[in-house]
Length: 222
Image (cartoon, rainbow, N blue to C red; front, top):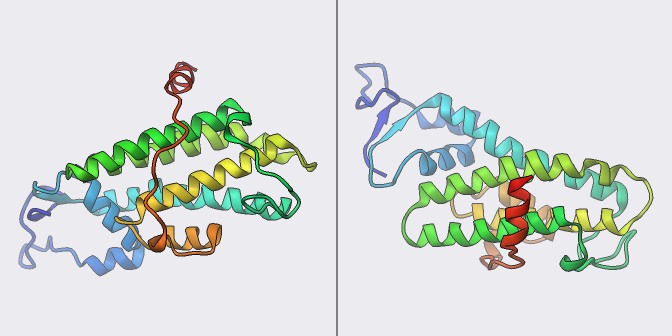
């Protein structure tokens, strides 16, 4: 990073009383949120105006949202005896092509965002990559997909549609954890271990799959 300034753009100084102890934020919002904020707040070659309120916003917007989506999936998966790849109360995997348009759209959006995220990392545009991935988590995954899918998981009986929803959530959360891990390594490792049984830092970097530009355009219109 460039020089780290206070939220008003002034150099931090103990004599001015505007110096910030990073451990205050590590202990309150967590290292994940602090790291994510510092990467996404601006280009790495520019000075950074460090705003404590923005770190709190990052924690609430990005990491609480991610955790809540994970718990939404985990709680219903536990109730239904869902196990990725089949097993438990289920005995088959629903192919992506046979899943609902909402599922296929989310996987397509993740593929598009994942490809862009990778390309922006290669070009050192880490701030743009992080912002795009955060927008996917908050708007596409949480505000749109989860809200549209709640009723699909309320049915107490087993169904192909409910299984497809669980598999989609599992796949998306797993891949999303792998994308976030280089920037904010701790919460996503906890989630990834719970979903797959292995550390996210031992997993392969995801490669984009299942992209459908026509479906994405249709959903954008909706």
